[in-house]
Image (cartoon, rainbow, N blue to C red; front, side, top):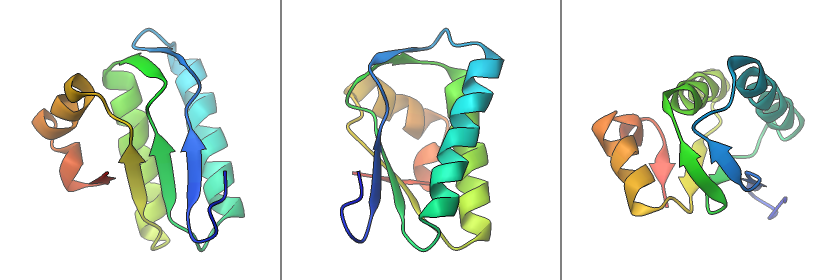
Length: 100
């Protein structure tokens, strides 16, 4: 969803804690493709439908952050539940991305 000045990507409902690496790699490629298309806009990932997430998804987000940072694009996340927000803080990902 393009909100004008910001591209919002709602991650589909699912369990991201058990996705295989190839699936996560495809997700990352799709997110980078979107970032390429909306090159001059910040990207917001909406986690409100994500039931569970694991280290591999966090790694994917970190890689996406660095791709966007090199291009001066900002990555924001929203819709985290308290457990997910805790993961972002414990792993210090909250220092890389903006959490709404």
